Length: 363
Image 1 (cartoon, one colour):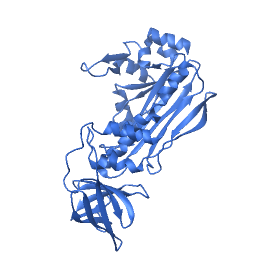
Image 2 (cartoon, rainbow, N blue to C red):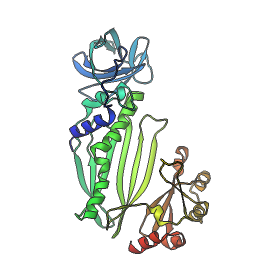
Image 3 (cartoon, helix red, strand yellow):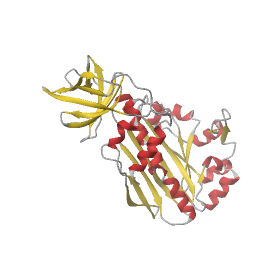
Image 4 (cartoon, rainbow, N blue to C red):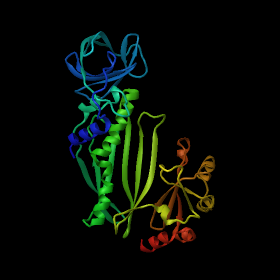
């Protein structure tokens, strides 16, 4: 996969189909030019900005104060800075100062298109574009349960040190295996990149002038005769109130290639289903009786974690060789308490739907 393709898709997702946006106030926008003789790209909006040298491609946050754009987010008066002497609609002239040196600064405006979810000049694809490049896949072999599979790593351009995307592929060429592999490959696609790690970088750049952190990984946890279990991990820091982290289990039927929702293997006595309005997805929560069943005999690893787990409504369900693994979905402040509770098939029998009972027999 070549990132020329990814860039086109990213641009189509992030850019409006409308004509170029109205002219921005003097200084606001994306710019390209030189500091001394070194080529740079920069962005400014309000009192926030960012720039990077094209030879290094590492963004440096800028904040405006006392008529100068100071490097860094801590506002140190001794930090290097950009000082503008002349600002016109299409050109900025000034100088970079730092360490007792002064270098001439010249910047020319770069035309940008604003996206429907406009994240400003620093969150535009035009500011990021020079840093994008080819993203080949690196493949190695892995083994689980005595079965070999291919580990797939998206080789993201080196300037994005805090972005990683990994998945895997099953061996074999049956229609079912090909269908499963098509789903497993989605995190590695250019379209997903535009909505995933690229969006994360843009969002953090728009707010803080520096790259965000993004990690996505699909790994197998069980490859059986009939079913595949995998863990889908996401975590990052993309300009929100706090970093996020999420793990959810995925199950595939290797005879059909279909992805399975394990909630369907449980009866209405175990899982409550409801929609909050006509457009919302169906919410699937454990009933109080089933939560009590899951927690029967369970002892919290940490006493302070008991309350959060005992009131959790949403639970991730993983298929294992011997039963289900139940993991509560906890609030951000409680995520350190997360643990998985294993329940064997023998205990689950009264709570299994006809689909679940048939699935267990076929496993």
